[in-house]
Amino acid sequence: MLYGSIGLVLFCFWLVLSGQYTVITVPAGILSVIGVVALSHRMDIADEEGHPIHLVPRTLTYWPWLVVEIAKSTWDVTKIILSPKLPISPTLIRVKASQRSAVGVATYANSITLTPGTITARVSGHEFLVHAVTRSGAEDLAEGTMDRRVKKFETGK
Image 1 (cartoon, helix red, strand yellow):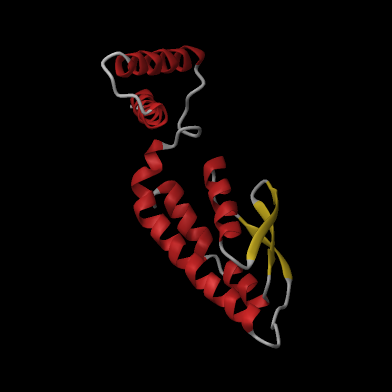
Image 2 (cartoon, helix red, strand yellow):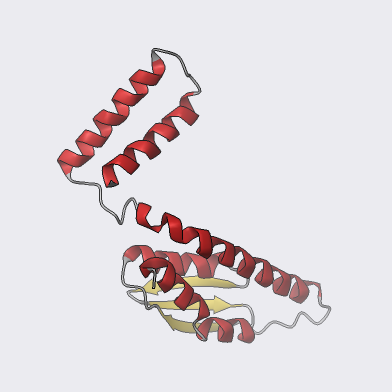
């Protein structure tokens, strides 16, 4: 299944980039993809971490949740910026990541950074140093909702 999905992704990518759909070019693209997939299989360089196709169904629940979180944070940061008092309280906190795979840890760190008002400044194993624009933003992150959502995305549980 892994190599089949890699082949499908590569072929779709090739189709989009080539823009040529003739009797000669499409079979040439298929042969190229078969060659690349065969080489990656022989070299044993493809794995589920590099091509996490098993996570695709879980994106249907995680990405919409993340988009809502980004929108809420965007609104909060906008209110702070437009406020004449500029009520910021920059805070650095350390956050533990409960994810077990590199994909899970990277997803959590990137999700923090994608959310306006917070940025993952350093990743040390399963601990992040996070800068938040406000103390309440840091407290929201420390409560662990995002960590739990990313863990559910990673493990399915």
